[in-house]
View (cartoon, rainbow, N blue to C red):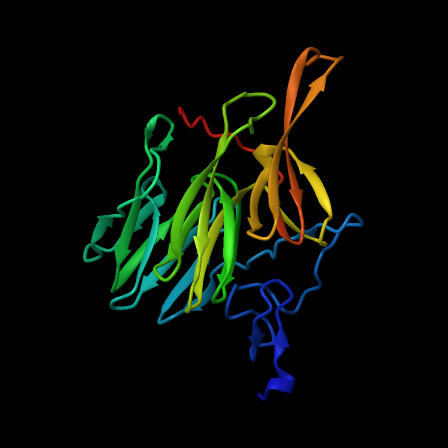
Length: 268
């Protein structure tokens, strides 16, 4: 199939010869995009046992309610992940701990640990919660910011860091800020796999266009989208006299949200 006959994936813009499924993100190519009147589109519903190729390795999404991501790692290739997300692994797959450069973090009062799994061999991951798997192929020179504890795994060619966003808290649970995980590619493409609680929706903001998002519902954004913490005083109702914390996101770029908002007790 020549370039003129290739099918463009509307989710990741990959060009495909397979007419039914994107080889880069797994999105079905034989169904229409579901977009609301306000411009939010549903993340593609990956079919059970969808398989995606990255480098010489493969990623397979299994199940629908509490999905599992199974990786078949080629020799000399590796992925990294938060250690509590591993579901199982082959006996011959070695694990090492990534040396993180940055301030200390915690998850449920436990240290924030990112683990590396090296091929060859198989390893599987799950967030242990109902939701959707979102596969984001990263082209060279891309940067994506993801809310804390939302990524399942990233391929070894994607660099990882994190930054603290002060002034963001959940209106019900309070808190003193939120972490953003930052994923960057340089000369080579990579793969980033996220888990969204409930359903996941994406919207592309025009330059200068902004929306306000409840911090617990934010999932990811392009680096070109700026984030600013805002506080709204609630003067009446059940929360009268308290404050509501919102994240203002300003384009241009993509913004992803999850319908089941979630607040992690970071403990910082």
